[in-house]
Length: 306
Image 1 (cartoon, rainbow, N blue to C red):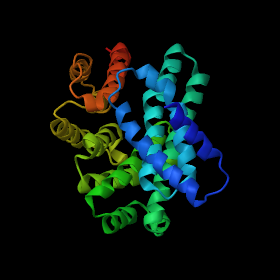
Image 2 (image 1 turned 60 degrees about the vertical axis):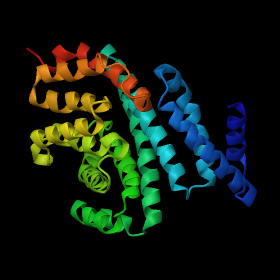
Image 3 (image 1 turned 135 degrees about the horizontal axis):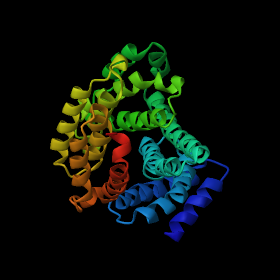
């Protein structure tokens, strides 16, 4: 691992983009992409959280040399999104619980910037696929949705759409209702809907889960629909066989809170807390979800005032 880190640093410091440098970058990128998968099975949330910032810098160093590599770009996007969701947002929640609003705002801003970096990487690769992306966005959400249907028709294209939407949506959630970012919600929905149409099971049905969260938590005047959201969550639970606890977590946090269903909230979160280790391939995500579920259960009287 020390050799790998040294290689990453060396590549990041190289000034040129000659053939030797690019070959080294591509080879190291392939190793890093395989290594990333092993983290998904790790059991120690704190250890991974402490190491992720260094990993992100390593990934960025490689990506700076091969910015046209879409697979590498998605690894960087995932790293930013994972760190923001699993650790930075948790820091903001801790600060809020302590009443430290200044720290809470600083951590939320940090999460937003991390998500925005991921979104911008996703849009960069979408532009590389087709130069008409910006014109489609400028034409509005309906035109953008049409553009996605016309330009994204293969199953393996679901990934870039999902990870771009995930980062964009995360930035909106961390924005403290910044109207400029909130106005982008229809573009996020269009990306999620197209990703779902291409591959509904991609990354544990996460696009379906995200659509459920949007429908359940967003006011109806902005396009939300709690019962449609519930249907999405039930679909995602069935597709994942209830083994990807992020679904139960979002179901509780968005739908159950929105409709005031305290019993459903408790049931879903207790399922996470008591669920053990049902799928080693998503062990880290499930342990993060468990930690978040415990935190939410402690806030139950705040979220469901008597």
